[in-house]
Image (cartoon, helix red, strand yellow):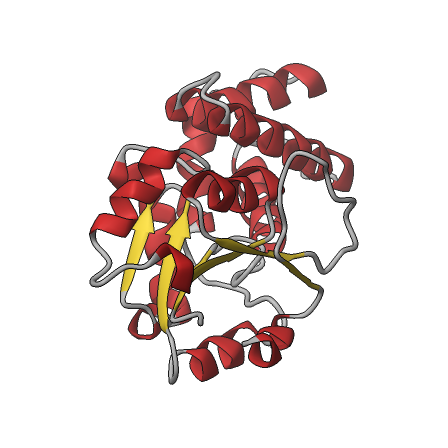
Length: 225
């Protein structure tokens, strides 16, 4: 019997891709670089690859936050300050929010019956701004942000930290819900809890993770348990 949900934030509850595109566009404009669709899509791919390297322990968080801009500027052939780009980008990224379809309503319903916790690899200051804007903090018992913890999903250490702070925690009664196979689902596997892959875009599964449930709409959670 499930009693405890661990929810990812980006691309599960909040639409990160939309927020990313808007924030990057504003940052590039401030740096007098044209924010073309191609450049925004390139940054998104670079950003995703850098976060995956962080998950694998290959680079540090600071290398992600600065390196993604250095790589972008190198590839598009412009001379810009990556540190300044990060500052402007994070300022805009942490302002406002965009919900994934049905996310708020599903969280509200689940919070009536289950304990909800947030587990995110995002930057603490950025996530704090978006969470406050979205007004979802009261729906969660606690929110675990990797930068505050010192460990990242999918590491066992990240989940051990969380589990020690969840009263009467039971692995058998917990499930993680997220869109990322590499951080959320593999993290759940590493932690020994059930997993639910939120896959609204029909991505392909990989053979090296175990998925207990797969959903394409968050409303499906209301009928699973």
